[in-house]
Image (tube, rainbow, N blue to C red; front, side, top):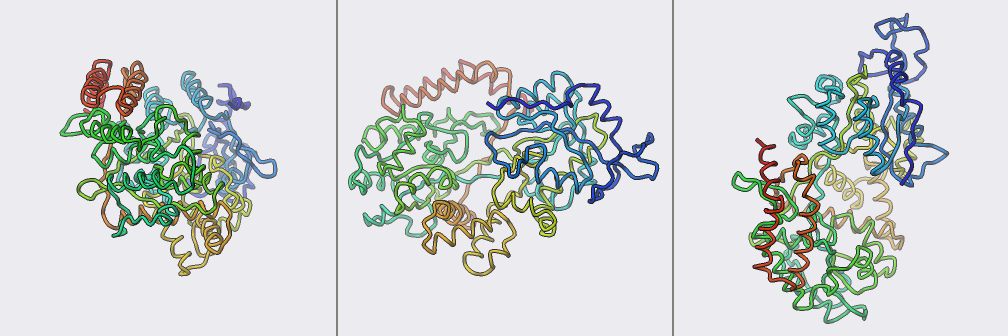
Length: 566
């Protein structure tokens, strides 16, 4: 783990002196020349003798990532993004603490315990947000959001039909700037299409991107029987030992099969007015029965309970398996391992449909990360202005990038977005498909690469075009599969109105969750593996699991979640 970096802004006395030096800001736009340093004497109003505000000092709790490569000696505290913010908004950003992973969570906990938080910081959970609120440490942003947020920024949040803002609204007050979390779409079945062509197999004749569980079984059997790459120890279908996933896409999981049967494992949801845990439903039992049948037939990996993530990746890369499951973007970071060893490899994405021809899927939590502002910070509007700058102006204004070529270089070179002052994303709910639409028009010759609005999609268009013209670079192959196949599948399902969406419950951590949930998760995973491999009977084994799960704290957790909802 990276060691936590503490700046000089850790003492209460220093923090107090900064607040006294801070000045009031009443306008939405600050001078862009950064010439006023705030060194003139200030009166009690926070203005200098000329009536102008000075540069505002802003301390930030910064969540970092490991191994981020900055150009030209830049750092998290001083880089192209922070310099642009400082110049545009006439502020001076200092990182009060920097940390990544668990170290960052500990720093947030320490700040909360001390009752002394930076002017702005990210918190990762609703539990932390509520604790900060209940301890009266964070500012109510309702009025500054209404006054200062741009129309475009508001439209991004509005696209989630109120779900994102609702997650940060406590007692009717907006207590944080939410990061958005768009839906990643269904758990996709990725199938080696070069093998299908080689074996003369046909799927999806109506080209709606949907196949049945029986279609999947047929392809897996053909791949095993014919063994297109003459590999040893071929496997029809491989799953990770945990079998199911709380993530909708569920890479290496059996989520696709469960969803097609109406099951939503590892999901809190409401049915007929009651809180239900998806792993305990009859539909989940049916899904386990299907997968258990595959194991008995030899279609499922015989080492299903012990394969690691890397093991399954190796099965795919070595030509031992030609089917896998995951989100639309796994070609970028997983399936590219297959291409690295065989540049003839091609994949085609499909979804499994239910008996009614629908693709069952669940919404993500609309919020991912929360930016909070200290109640003691005199200029909470600056947080909204930072959000405007990075999630509106930087995306919609080409003139801004012309004025800051080093920022343009960051985008082109893929410097990680965590280097921005706020380590969150704020995108519209439809941003994935909107960007795909632009990319599609570019690849079809309707617009040029330079006319593509998104810098990321301009890069994708360049790489994909090069791949289609014969360049065998792995980046072009990956982007071709993820963007023009994976996202196209989501677009097709959306246009055909084939999604059936579940909105889960996203509860706050309950007391019994804290004490019992880890053991309940262990019970679930161990039982499901035993059911699938035939160590215990599907019917009696599943029924006993449900009873044990309830007796060991599950029923109490459901009661506590129900009380939250009330």
